[in-house]
Image 1 (cartoon, rainbow, N blue to C red):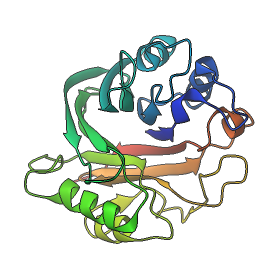
Image 2 (cartoon, helix red, strand yellow):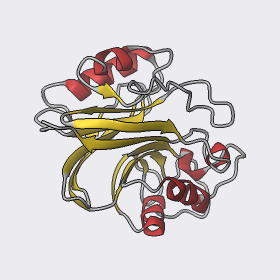
Image 3 (cartoon, rainbow, N blue to C red):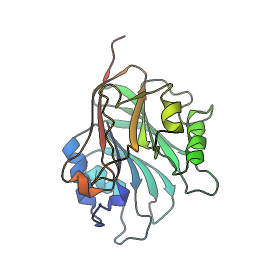
Image 4 (cartoon, rainbow, N blue to C red):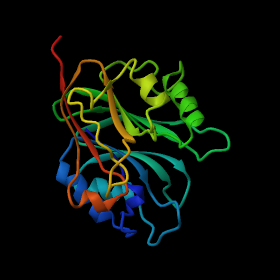
Length: 236
């Protein structure tokens, strides 16, 4: 499982390169990728469907949950998956006066025939904004309500220093970094100081490994580094 803010495929060097992002994803070889900032929000040319290009390059299925209607496709969250995507739904987490935000919930069947629900999210920059969005995530009508485990929630939480997202989610979810106590930063990619990107799980999922992917290519392809977690079904 991977969470990765790809920054619209614009690297730390300011260069737009979709193929470079695809190469970083291919280095990891995961079954599921939760991606944020997919698409073009600044009118960059040429404009094309970044989600479709990335999925095709890796031979994966994909679903998009865009938060901004920029260009012909939009800008926001995308899930790439090896296996079968059974359903997808976008949820609006926007706060009045702030940049539009949302999350994407996907029900999928992995190649091992195990069912899994994943929720890809990108929270806001302000403390109060994130608190409101966490309340929406965990609310009675939110994207997690009624979902039967196993469930993985991941994305760019913009939660530094650790604040409402960390505290509230930590009460009912397992942070993938905790078993290994690996709390290294993910942003900015060249000198990663802030741990903005996280993967949380609940249900019969055991974290077998966790790491921040710090290849030479990943250090330049986006302004964030990807995080990678290996999960297995826990014994009952």
